[in-house]
Amino acid sequence: MSVLTQKEAPGLSVAEDFLPLKGTDYVELYVSNSKQAAHYYKTAFGFQDFAYKGLETGEKDIESYVVAQDKIRLVLTSPLHSDSAIGRHIDKHGDGVKVIALWVDDATDAWKQTTSRGAKSFMEPTVEEDEHGRVVRSGIHIYGEVVHIFVERKDYHGLFLPGYNAWKTDYHPTTVGLKYVDHMVGNVALGRMNHWVNFYEEVMGFRNILTFDDKDISTEYTALMSKVMSSGNGFIKFPINEPAAGKKKSQVEEYLDFYEDEGVQHLAVATDNIIDTVTKLKARGVEFLRVPSTYYDTILDRVGTIDEDLAPLKELGILIDRDDEGYLLQLFTKPVQSRPTMFFEIIQRKGAKSFGKGNFKALFEAIEREQELRGTL
View 1 (cartoon, rainbow, N blue to C red):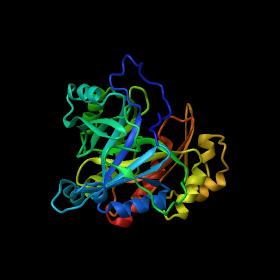
View 2 (view 1 turned 180 degrees about the vertical axis):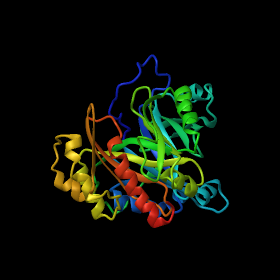
View 3 (view 1 turned 90 degrees about the vertical axis):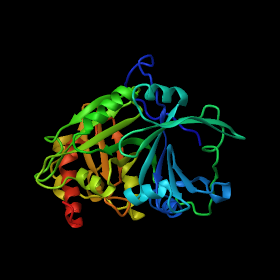
View 4 (view 1 turned 60 degrees about the horizontal axis):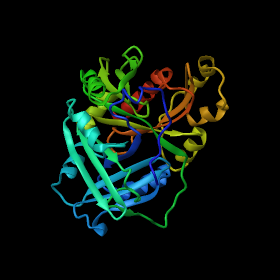
């Protein structure tokens, strides 16, 4: 399965973009039980068998299952022994994203460009080889314990990465129509959002394309602020959230308390048919946030004409928003692990380039209802 360039968005010219990113290569999660996590993502989200490394491949310390759906690849990694760095990471944070891997033409240059601009190195350029060719990977630290790995695979013709074998089982649940990673959202501590905005601007050549303050993202009780960072070519987007003052504990504060650090709040994954995708996900047991049915009473007055019938959107709880370019449809899962930390967003863009600003109030009120049930509001 080759990595394919994601949908283009306007951005900098090639000459200006010192860190041209071709797409999201993979996302690696550290999880307590990789075998069971792989089964969950196959069963619930329609991911497929892809690759594996562990004891059977000569790896003595960790086990990783790779599951795939269209352009999305999740690497699910667990330690095989106690007192390991990965085990300590899981003890502190629970299951969550460790690596956001970015596909590049030159991983050595990507590392030099970013570390020369102030990034802390996580992995110096490293060549990994097998009978299928060579991959070069390098990496830098970002917020919390999350890292970016730059992956150069132009001289590699294998399945995934050296060290991995094909993973095949007799269990093949059908896909649910997920296409690619649309964006990934990071939660950072109060007062740290602008630090990381500056990091992405100065170190990685990103641009701040949207800003939401506590007037945009607030309810009676909680608020947060967010800035959306986009790579020079527009392929990669990373919104960054920080809490804002409110009467009660916001979702970002709850995340920081339970993750015990800054980290990835959610992965937004795209579909071309959100009604079909969400219908399949719900049938497989994936739980979603719900807004009150009254949300739909006036929604078309706000967003105008849409292609879809409103009835199935209302039945499934799918949210709608419009910007100058078109509209989008989105829905958010509940957290997918025991701690109220990481979740998924399902999104279908019908021309819109935005992130659902018109839905923020209804969405946050739905999150607050969940927080109240958890006793953490």
